[in-house]
Length: 132
Image 1 (spheres, rainbow, N blue to C red):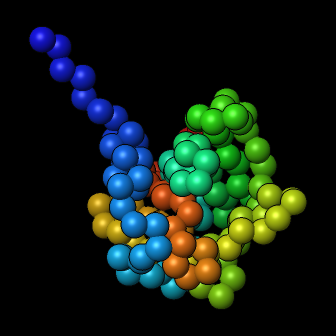
Image 2 (image 1 turned 120 degrees about the horizontal axis):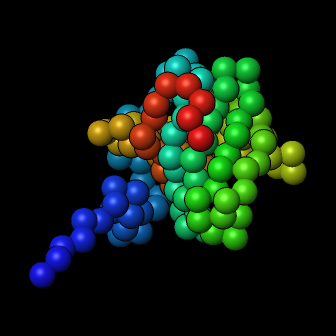
């Protein structure tokens, strides 16, 4: 019998579905820590409300390239802006600005929380440079 190994992204997504969405378990990052984590890095993410998965490059100049891996925008790349404000990670899509605190959940997994509590996105697999 052949066994299929679940992808890390799928496993993480299922963990997020089964966990409470209103608590912050990890340590909150400061603005400087957020800047260091995201700047000139490529990472993967999950948008919890819509279930989209994506790969993102956050440039040190504030540019942000998002490649959607699933959902209605699958295989599309969008250009946004990112910045840090009041110890929050913010993304400007051109239509709206989405800011939230970032918590370190351990093992290279980070959660973005809107209004200081609602878990809206999960980020993981951070690597140096632009690697979309």
